Amino acid sequence: MTKTKVFIAHSSSSRGWARDFAEAMRGSGVDVWFDELSIKPGDSISESIEGGLRGSDIVVLLVDKESLFKPNFFFELGAALGMDKKIVTIVSEDFETSKLPLPMQRKKYLIRKSPKETAEELVSGLELLQGEAA
Image (cartoon, rainbow, N blue to C red):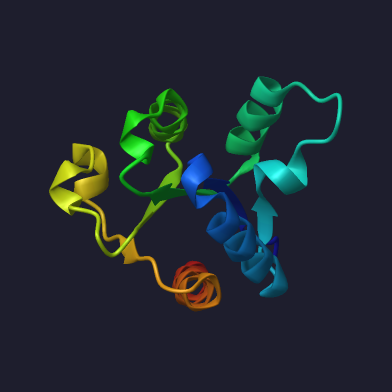
């Protein structure tokens, strides 16, 4: 059985939380693509992001008030939709979910807790998915 590959997209305002979340996911045995950990010096950033998206099974979008004003957010969402990837949205507690793009409103999302708690919640959901496929 191959590991689920998860691409983590975030805004710069969530960078620290996202890094801790990525490490918690890796600690749980999930294969994670996270820009700081996956893009090496000299790599093309855009090609690395595209490769990470293509190679992923699930795209996790961390959403906060800043995200919706960033072109990369919409690029990553559009690419995930176009590549027919499973999308998991994680929103901060104070985020008004009615402001999410419609494709994200129509899917169950997670409320951001500590990086470790949120990773555990997502990993348990992934284990359920894998159990259904078996």
